[in-house]
Image (cartoon, rainbow, N blue to C red):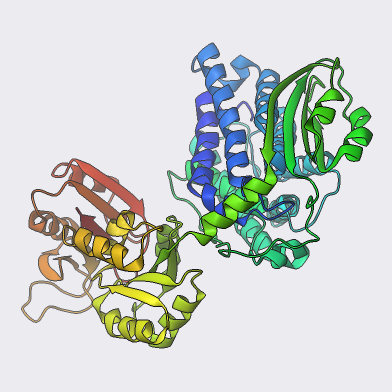
Amino acid sequence: MSKHDNSLSRFRTVVAAALIELDSRREEINDLNVFPVADGDTGDNMVRTLQSVVTELDRLIEKQGEGSLDSVGRAEIVDAVTNAALLGGRGNSGVILSQLIHGAAEVMIDDDKPVDALMLAQAMNRASEQARRSVNEPREGTILTVMDDMAKSLLALVDEGAPVLPDDVDETTQNAALATSLEAAVSEGDASVRRGPDLLPELNEFGVTADAGGYGLVVIFAGIVAALKDGVVPDVQRHTAPREKPRPASHASSTFQYCVNFAVVGEGLDREAFIPELERLGDSLMVVDSRTGSVLRVHVHSNDRAAVEALFEGKGEIRDIEVADMFAQIDARTRRLRDARSLVLAVVAGDSMKALFELDTSVVVLDGGPSLNPSTEEILDAIHAAPVEEIVLLTGSRNVTPAALKAAELSGRLVEVVETGTVQEGLAILHHHYTASSAADNAASLRAALSSVTAGGVAPAEKDDPQGRYSTGDAVGFVEGELVGWGEPEAALAGVLAALPTEAEIVTLLEGSTSPFGSGLKASVQARFPEVELLNVDHPGWWLLLAVE
């Protein structure tokens, strides 16, 4: 936060974007949650922490109107935001996240220069230091390691000559520079998360491929990048938890049943004074304080909540007491993973399309390559890698159907092949799949939904038309595989729109990075169809894909 972050509303937009992205992967993060206890609430706790910050920003905006951060008072904002994060933090992950927010805010409040790669690196370092001080026994491979690695990546950018922004930098330039720096940090954070199982044995014991908190942190920063880049979210690898695995006897907090969280509000609260007695009563201890020493956030795993609370009697007002039965949470997480009866296996092409499909946690993806033509063996391997016995396979192209049918036959599992002629058809019908239903029932549901979907697209012509209608590189438009428009991109698009069913209610546009259509694409489609969703996603050989329902 500097004088260049010219409004509370802008700051709120960034935090809210992080919250939206985090919330979209909340259940996935919950299912990865095995350390320090497999209680399946990391996503919930991190979301609640950010929600608390957004609520506090809304309060400040209402109080000050649309004023700049300086007009409100930057110190007031940092105190308000860090206290909100601290009061809203729940569980290990939420409280650590609150300390990351605290540490980062301290750096940004002390510097009156525009936020650049160096300030971000300093902020992350301070955030990591603050978070490590709050954890009784820091472990590598967790959110702490991920934050350290992201900070180091930013320092490397500075060493390599990342630009120092002038004091009078405009908002657009600053956003672009921030996005570039944070994209590099997200990429390193993504890699750090994948290294987690090598550093934290408990992840391997449970068969998960990522620490939930570290993964959640990277997702948060991906959301921030999206806010700076008009909604373009950087790729972050998704992680799937195994359906069921026994809890190791050596796992942390195996002897304590309750996760106790509360805040203490008072004056001159000394966190160190409470730690010895809390350690006697439980483990997984975190006691963190605010900048002013007026708030403590306490988190401990214990069997005696009354004794924990009694330590703070007369020291201040105890607020927001929450006690969670971790044994029940572990059982619920296990049931949630086990009870997924069927999943979708979608054949797609390219990383960005893969990431789009994986936003639905009931989907696993096979990248069929640029030609969208995987072998029977590749499909068979993907079927066997899925964590369920019943699968609905969306082909994404009719060329995939023969190999898909053969793989289904050889798999030894219940596999229903639903022939989608295009990837956008599969995307349009995903919401008709229900994990608790059988593959057979889901296949029937998806095929019924498919009958009301029409697919089309615009692409550059790969060769000259024998009839002379277009040349190589010209735009060609198709609907349901039939050529309906050609020539300039706008003409090809007009042909596509004219060929779509007039009764269509929803249009989904998937626009590639090399698209020749400008910023008016969505408006031109909305002129004919009232409900239009535009997503930025690449598919080999196409400028634009669309599906109407």
